[in-house]
Length: 235
Image (cartoon, rainbow, N blue to C red; front, side, top):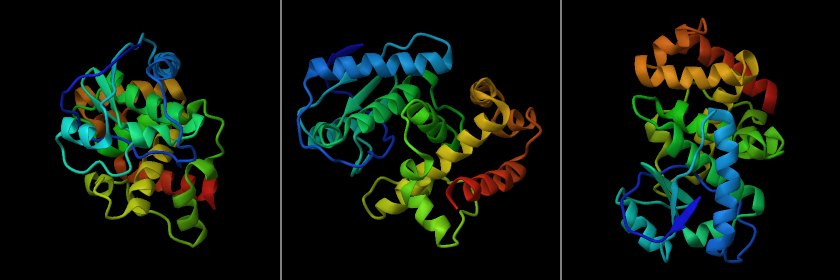
């Protein structure tokens, strides 16, 4: 894994897991973490992963480099063949949070997001990120679990508006990622991880609707089964 400092734009990606430590992260430690995350991503995708990790001097510089508006609460951003780390936020994550964030962003880098609905590319990245984390589902999806226990199930797979990282509704942003993650986790549990990876790749070529049809699903049937899965996992 190459870790360096440079300046290029990047689109926003995932929200950070809970911040528990204010310690800094050295470039050497970040390189080690990134190498480990790349191995985990490569194991799912079945191909080597070796992108560039960019470390700007501050969150303000990361936002300038990203050039896409607010990045409130984000610990890293993916862009093309690289990841931009937001240093202040990333440094406050616990070790599991750092692993999840890096694997998430490296999944975007390695797998791409073109032609995909946001629930699929963000959910798949979180699926890879949380796959080996050891976190219980109710811990990783705490905000969504609160909603489910209150009797409020999501009605539809999250769209682009739910992923706005503008700081206006952090809880809704967290739930959007959790909803997307559980949609992909359902697909992996029901059809196998290999089928989820094939779905992802096919969807980039033929579109998500046709790729889902290959599993005998429509968006409507997936939504119904996903809602039942959310209730089962978090209720």
